[in-house]
Length: 192
Ligand SMILES: [Zn+2]
Image (cartoon, rainbow, N blue to C red; front, top):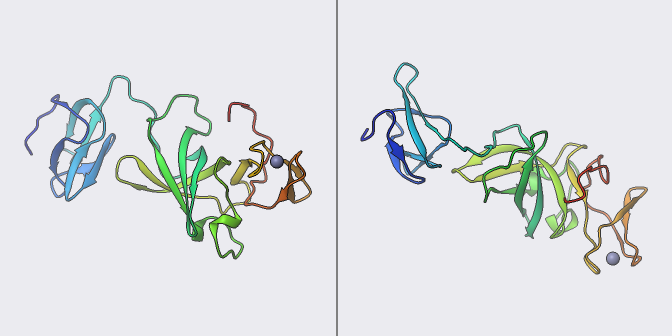
């Protein structure tokens, strides 16, 4: 290890090898090294062999099991890409730039051939974090009934669509189905 307790570290800086310590808050593993994911002060816990960063104005960070609100930025056959806006139940800002994806195997319990049947660009979703990849990338699931789209956008007129039975309808008369959350339309914050 080429650092000591209290050292100022920068995002991306190598702290030690993965064999030396267990990565904890604000660190991530890449190429066999533990690196800093935020500007802050190094904290070395020799007892528990843990290494972490203490940051003064640390934004909220995301853990496996957290539920997030995000929007769909890209849809491919087997994946939807998501930009994370907030952690559910937490009003603090999260790290800018958190991105995630949903793989088709974690999108729904129903059988589908393509993610295009489930999500469209601009949809607002609630999803659960199932994996963290690097410092700013997460894998998400929307398989549970109360996960999925909470606000859907019409592909023709870009307006948000209303729920009618198990279908979504738009005032332009377009109707469709997607992977909806059982909480569809019950979102409180109109900004999402
Ligand atoms: Zn429409």
